[in-house]
Length: 429
Image 1: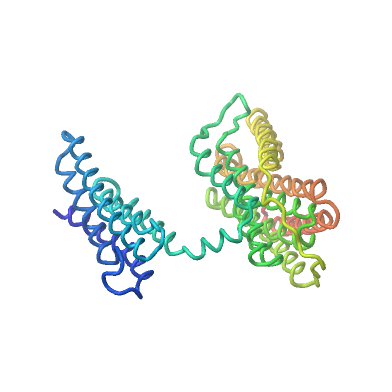
Image 2: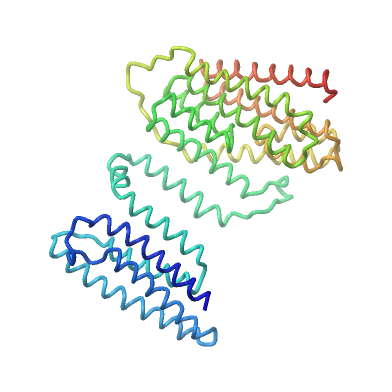
């Protein structure tokens, strides 16, 4: 009995969610002038829960009968709602199926709460009502969005929700222990950072947009931020100094991210890693803020022209290159002992510092002692910084490349001095 009451409570809640949103849209209309409001949707939710609960009574032995009952109940509900909505549209001279679809969805989600997972039903209901509530925002977005932006968004969604679930999630020894899903995730991160940066700059302006995109992208991959900003600099989309400041901020977040990952998995690594990584992060953050807010960075007289948010071929090519680097790093680390671990860290760090941090932390202290593992992680950080220098010089070029070199040099110097000071004072190595 308690479980059945819970089903009805969730169904009522789902119906009320839809009903409040639909009722608010038509709150100025007189009673009887609309097909469905808060009461109708609340009853639709209860009807769905009741239908689902009755279907459960049939049991697994009569699953076909239960399915037929649910289908019939849904068909009757949908038919009645459609007829009334059609008459409403005719009276108002409009064309809209939103109320009908919302009522059908409320019934289905309430029924699924009874026969399936209540948490899924509730989550989908919240998402659906959120979409309904954002009607004006979504319509405004469609009026402003360009075809390249829409195409890039669709490609990114397809990469994430269609292709990613079917990509194998295992390492293959034939290709150097590379995990296809890991590589595809790198491609998604590269594309996502580029797209989010594009949207942020369009919405917030160059300076704030670049820094926000860099901060968000740095949580996933500072290399992706570097690649995206280097391409923007090469195309003349934004001031090189501001774009380089974005890379500096992403580097700072990357340093702290490596420290957190390493410390969480192997706390003994903190003694050797904290000083150099924190010092490098503070240096990068200071340079980023100084570049954006401390100097005058006049915008060009002509308005900045934006191109495609990201190029799929370039994204996939760079992800494939990183896959090769990861394979080389894995082979070195697994075949040459402790020395190979350092060589592997240097090679793997060109593509992914986090992977090195995780692997070294897991090897501590069984295979490597804490100072050796920390040294491997720092080598990977230096190696990854070299990757950013290469990206800046080969792709960004000019002023962007110079600023990346300056930031990298100061960060390495600050980290090196902090490491030396910590070793001298605390005996960390």
